[in-house]
Amino acid sequence: MSGSGLVRGPYMMINFHRKLFLLACVLLIVACGDARTFEAAPQQTASQTASPAPTATPRPQPAAAQTFRGQIGDKLRVRMRLRRDGDSLSGSYFYEGRKGELSLKGSVDGRGNFTLREQTAAGAQSGIFKGKWGTNETGETELTGDWSRPDGSRATAFTLTELPVELASGAAVVTREIKEEKKRPRYTIGAEYPQIEGAAGGRFDGFNRAVAAVAAGEANDFRKGMAEWEDTPGSEIGSYIEAGYSFGVATDDLVSVLFDIGDYYSGAAHPNHHTRAVNYDVRRGRVLDLAELFKPSALYLKTISDYCVKDLKRQFREGGWSEPEQMDAGIEEGAAPNAENYQSWLVTRRGLAITFDPYRVAPYAAGPQSVFIPYSALREIIDPDGPLAPFVK
Image 1 (spheres, helix red, strand yellow):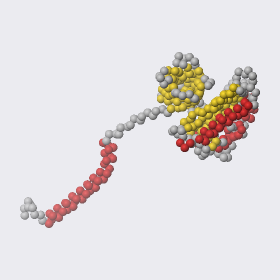
Image 2 (tube, one colour; image 1 turned 180 degrees about the horizontal axis):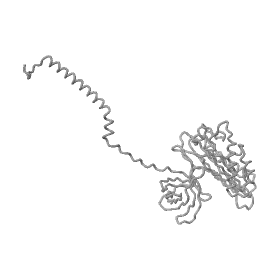
Image 3 (cartoon, one colour; image 1 turned 45 degrees about the vertical axis):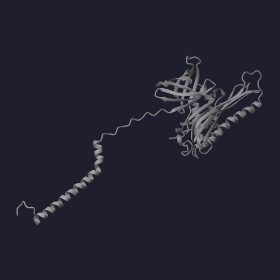
Image 4 (spheres, one colour; image 1 turned 180 degrees about the vertical axis):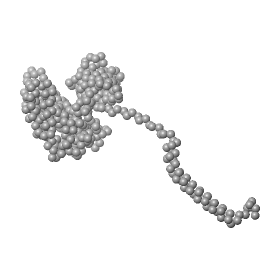
């Protein structure tokens, strides 16, 4: 049989089948290996051959606008909203109780010196603010300086403090006022109070009623006092009561407000001054007591008193008061650990602000006194589930 024939013998057929079997095994192994390679290959190939994904350049976030409230001179109450982007300032302001806003544009340097030029809606420059951008002890931004006409004339001091208001979208603080004037007996009433409007579901209705009641109560007490007061003939200054307010903090859960009240009865030796605080728990719908900020077993009044006595003595010694040791007895009595001495307190983002009215810890000539207690000094006694929890970190 020729080796070139097409017919194969049994041995050759067996070898042929063996070769087919071996070839099939090899193909199966290769196929399995290829399958494993296929599963892993996309990740390896992508990491090795694909160019890196381009890194997106983050867009600069616009600076948050800050709201300020204060006054120009003795009487002009203003509300200002400013945005600070680097050394640029922009915003607007208005006089409370009046319609219309004035736009603001200016700059601030690295030392906090700023200039703001105001413009009317028609584009005319109407005034200039020049002053200092700083921070007060409670952490809010404070602006101080002079406002003047564009030519520099009629310079008038101003002070503006950041409103520590962090309310949900739609809610805003507006100022309401009780105004009254009578000729007989001669007196004026001007009592401002805040209202939070625009919140869904009337969330701040209870707070609004509480602070409106304080303003109305002060005005009524003054009217009663005038009914019993004999006006001094020929007195140049008529009787009056004036009430303003400031915020410690305002969130969706807690609002803290201090009323600053001054009154004068015509012919009296001097005006009087006192404060009223409203610390309102929005969630529970009621005014807070100081004790509710602390653990039930905490000796909170002693802790607060010890801090205040020490700090007040320091203030009088560092403030240049002659013979400050004469104040010690009044401080120790007026700041003693009893609830009567601690009626005017505010919650702020960084601590408690305590106010002592004239005569409480010092003579009238010394004026009202205040002590700021950082939360770090109260951390051990603060209720971790209480109203201060969001501010203590």
